[in-house]
Length: 443
Image 1: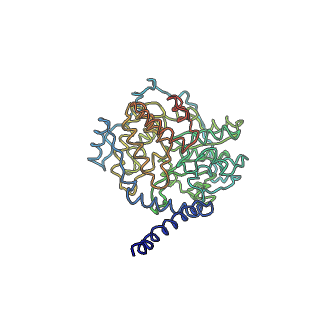
Image 2 (image 1 turned 120 degrees about the vertical axis):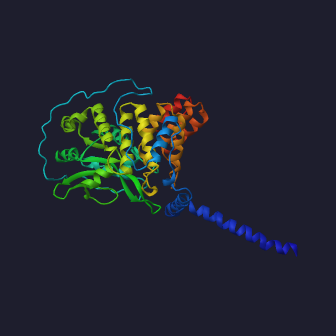
């Protein structure tokens, strides 16, 4: 009797286990995996999002001065920031103490712009079907104008060897252009609408990085970074024409919408050109040819915008000020600006918070590292990695900077672990390779 009862119990155990094992094996069959994996990942992402909504996460600086700033601003969230903007160059990190001035101020007589321009020759590529392929698709389009016909997959292998990499930085795109194509590229910040029109009117498409509120894979409308290639404008309609890899070719973007989105990325832009046309490109840039002058002008612009717009715009303005001061190596001033940005961020309604900011821009890590605020780097990097609810937390820059902070604090095992993780998600990432080598570890 006992033996006969054991058989049904045994069957109830081994049959489900057998089915589970077969299911796991079937999942890894390539055709099945391709169809099922993304659905499973999306489900896991939705669960993670529900358990820990990223827009609820707020970075609170632990530095005593920063904490005082945080307390002051959170007590009066709707008031204008009380700190008077200044461009005093007083670094507290390792940068040299220098007063920076533009190297030249040439007089430029503007040429009247055409009322409408539409450049032809860009071969449209979309980003769909591949995760986070905005950058490869847009860079491929920008290159196609100059006769470099690379598929987005080819470009992707060069600028994001790990497809799940959340972001490609403009400097990585610039490096790819100059090392892999025979063309040249220039990246500057603080651009404006008039400059964009001048480049387009002279026959140069412009690649922009900007922010947009879009529906994510969890079905929520949130802020995220995006690239666009601008190939035209129409004064009568008040729009620029973008080759938008997410939407459509010849996508019209109203001027005010463009500026609002571009502000969140410090008005950064990239222009590609043949080497023999460098003189023409520099003439269009004018005083922005000199990077110091460009960074100073961008910092001044950010300081003016601190008092404009609502909380989100003020947050971006303070963040941009910090970014430009990092570029000027004023790390103390930059850290203070980022602290102000963090304080304002905490007062922004949750659904409007640009929680992906550190996916795309890493200036705070520089500022806090060169002012010795290592615990703030660890806190900020850890929080940033937690904001990734879908897929793996694959932000190589955050792992790198957290590793540098661990190293500075003497925690070498944690530093090495983070550096190796960064290389797992971005094979060959040069800063991590160099840091590991300096620690005596083979990358």
